[in-house]
Image (tube, rainbow, N blue to C red; front, side, top):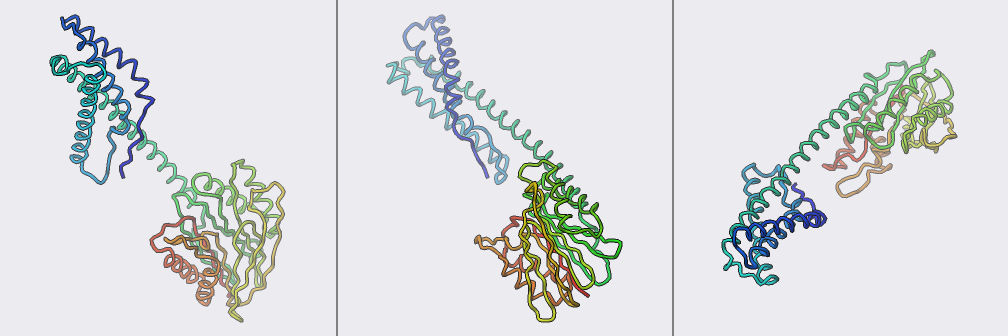
Amino acid sequence: MTVRRALDPGAALRALPRALGAGLAMGVGFFALGLRDAGPLLVPSIFSVVMWCGFELVGPWLAFVPDERRSAGAMALRESLRGVALYTGLLALAVVLCLVLAGVNVVANFAVAVITYLIGFCIMSLVGAFHTTTALASAARERAENARKTQELEEARALQVSMLPAAAPDVPGFTVAFGMRTATEVGGDYYDWRTGPDGELRLAVGDATGHGVRAGLVVVAAKTLFQTGNAGGALDAEMRRVSDGVRSLRLPRMNMALVLATLTPGRARIAAGGMPPVLHYRARDGRIAEILIEAPPAGQLARASYREEEVILAPGDRLLLSTDGLPELRDAGDGVFGYERVRDAFRAAASGSPQAVVDALFAAADAFRGTHPLDDDVTLVAVGVL
């Protein structure tokens, strides 16, 4: 898409004294050549002011702007015709001003008019070339800056991906599947796991504020804090520790919604802050229970309070931990996927393996949003009880 900048009246006003001075200088030169009527003084001044100030006024609009939809020849022809049309319009304006304001008959001063026309054409060419060169230089700087940012984002993306576990945990009594789709080069979602000395499985799912490099930094901090936590310790204390660590980064308006879960045979302990409810599918009756823990995201408050919830597990049960990217998913008509669809899709797939649950939820999300791009990262962690 071709976008041109607005007109620049300030540049035209700044050019006015120089244009007037150049016109008067040409008039003095014509007097020195023996052309001593009124025309040689007024015509160059009017032409110089109209041409110079006119091109400074419309310079941003006239400057070359690349258009990927057109060939190089078509773009060159378009810009040339644009310049000729503009010059012709300014020339006509100058002629009218010479006749109306100064009473100068341009035809009677034909030699002066021709010389002034050529000088005006040179002015047009120089000003046009200046603006074109400026536009090309600006485009080159923008390309270089975009390349630098792209490289930085790719490096940050590689760092974030390296923060995610390479494989699912292999612990007795449970099977786990992970899934993530990011909305930008560097997303703010995070998932992780570790095991304790007594064989317990601890899971973490997080959602840093926003996207980009700063979100990636919060992810790195959260992983470090999670992996160095006290094995077997209370989850509410672990949440406070992560919250204090995220706050210590001193990144304005950056925090991390987080859910921690500790799984042992027959039960799960869950603590969270700022996250959607954990869904528990109970195999014995096919019902889904919501474990909603209301607390602030990690790093948001200096003295946040967190608590644990305990869930009794039975063989065939399923747990679903997710970020808000799935329920807040939007389609092309700005409709929202919603928590009810999440529960329905989870219930329909819960009898399958954890990986089948993750695949089914992503399939439901894709069917809902169609061609609409992801507005936020989507992370799913499904746990199966054996």
